[in-house]
View (cartoon, rainbow, N blue to C red):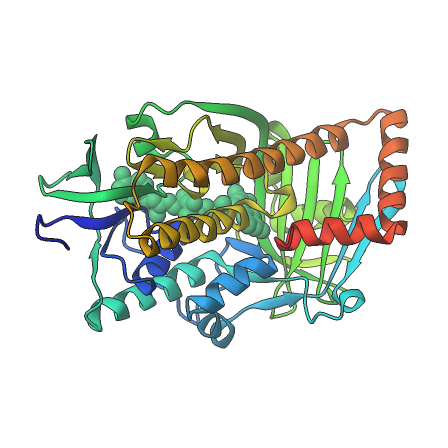
Length: 399
Ligand SMILES: Cc1cc2nc3c(=O)[nH]c(=O)nc-3n(C[C@H](O)[C@H](O)[C@H](O)COP(=O)(O)OP(=O)(O)OC[C@H]3O[C@@H](n4cnc5c(N)ncnc54)[C@H](O)[C@@H]3O)c2cc1C
């Protein structure tokens, strides 16, 4: 904190993106406060695998490694996926990726959301114990945000006030800060819900992520370390309601059929949870000395498993801009620094989000002609090695 009692950065939201941002800034020597309204949930190895898991791309893993928390994730529980198979319910043609083709050990990792939050929070708490310049304010809720010429003032619900050069809003898809700053969004309601659960299967998952597109929405099976698979089944709202109401036996029977029995029968299912699906893109990422990051800036369809990966690319980019400003002794909350971040990330996130929407729309059609074109496109993409490599690079965050 400087002589005026001013912090370098306030981060609001200790979801995975906000917690990673705060930890990166502390590692880089910034004075940081992290404000979170809900205490992060505990994670214990003896607990059932968290219902929410994410597929992490290679660059996300590299970021966690750099922050010193990836070894903790591996020591706890994570599952590598080495292959991916994507196909269409209505047309022949399959797209296949194999990490061995690139001489790599894995295409990515499946990790529990709660575990990621847990290891990040533990690293942040250790930083506080080690005397780093970090304040963890939790539970604490942001009430007001006031932009001033040379700083931003945050009023907490309990009346406390904090001042900093920059505020990073990582407060999720419904971002109260984005609303308070008057930043509009472009929204698309998919009228779908994603059902998630962990399921047992008759055949082994072979460390493979399986994805079948069918009219109504895609179904993904992500391999877990204990041999089960974690499903993300996107469905029209009324169909989701129907499937949620089935008993386990009925649900498992329909699920096995929906995956074309590629893993045989479905032998068990945990409790099912459902998430409404909506694309929400912020029209600006910057307002004064406040900047949006993660789902606060862009919520996307989960069909490509990229939402958090995009958020972590925001973290890497913003971290780089702030480091550069600091190395030049310039104001890290200045408009030109934040604009560069916005320029670079907003276009990439918008291209990705709109691309997922386009895939969702084209795979949602049950017209035979469109299904034929889809099958052809999958087949071509699978045979043209440079195109396939480019798709794999994009998913891994290497472009
Ligand atoms: C079904 C499904 C499957 C998915 N699968 C994948 C996948 O495989 N791979 C992938 O990369 N992504 C995936 N995603 C997307 C991913 O889950 C999200 O992108 C990611 O969790 C968003 O993280 P975040 O930190 O930006 O936001 P959040 O997790 O929403 O965190 C926001 C935080 O801000 C806090 N907060 C809010 N308001 C305030 C306030 N006023 N004051 C203080 N704190 C506040 C909240 O309590 C919360 O902790 C999936 C999403 C869904 C729905």
